[in-house]
Image (cartoon, rainbow, N blue to C red; front, side):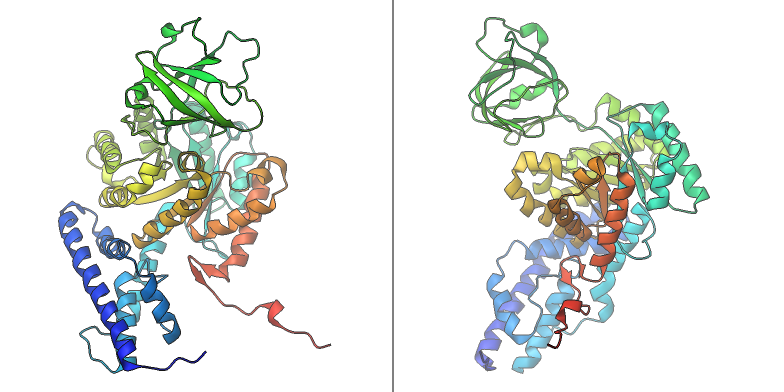
Length: 501
């Protein structure tokens, strides 16, 4: 197919790009002017500027412009997250030369194209440690309880290549955590490794508090009615329901509406609200994993359709935060939904650290749809005051959004964070089968490969954590020469050589 350079055609495309550029510039500057007074961290200012320009661009449909740019050998604007204005300026300048038109847009210098990547690299190093020799993505490992007693486990993990040790404050206690922390500090110093410590607060995770049934066979099946009760004293033995369940945060009931979905036990039981009353709610089982399932206490409950007003920090979280401020390098903040959640956390940090709370690095865990919807505001609030990163907590996010939509949302989070120079942790069930059994599934390998787009990948607990680290390292090393973020890197391919017959 031949392409003829027609001046009218290219001039029209140039005018479309100029209009787009001016809209992005104007809208980005307006939004920046509204927010810049809140930016306390000088290091975040340029990142915030680029984020506002990127967000302005992503409010528009540019697919047609992209398709028109491709035949001219110009950037199709698909990889401009960290360099929004320089990319637009470069394309406009090049196209103006093709069609012989003068514009006020000049070719940006090469440094402006890489400034965002350099800021992201700097932020990643400060959060998750030095870049490994053969790959760029760091490895985070959730420490099991036995790490406090096993004299070799933490040493094995550090020697294998663990960059960040995650302590889940939902489990164990201060004594156990401090034993782990002291081991990490001692061994990492001995091995001359910079291993960061993340203490992950529990946050407002809603769980089944108790389960009660008069039926001998209390397994639930599709069609069963269940009572979500707000108080154990409200149990009605005559109520025609299969089970009665209590929740750890009973105030959720005032926000429930008929038709709202309620997901139980990591989404393996899907229900919907059929009635709301003074004692709680009646829910119907619509779908479940398998033909029947037994429900137990301390199983997660998600309310994807319900706008819940719950405090991001419990009393326990505040106590754990005090420990983290003294001993951890990073504080993980669970179930972040809005910028207000970040404000509440920052205010608590100021109380603990006597107005030095801005020094503590924060990692916001995005695990609800509202967290994704409010991600730009969450980043702006967090990074304007504190060193800031984001974890894509794909377990709860998948339950809340549905698995099909998760594929889209996790990419959107990566794009927004790259535009703001924010390091991202790719988390939940990475090599889950491998770390538990020693053998990975094919799907796990593909998922881990996708994780190379993030700055850090998290492994959860299992008996084969060292093997999990080694497998990640092998994948990261291979992919280092193939891809950076959304950009393919074209190294020579062995399969490209055609053998002679």
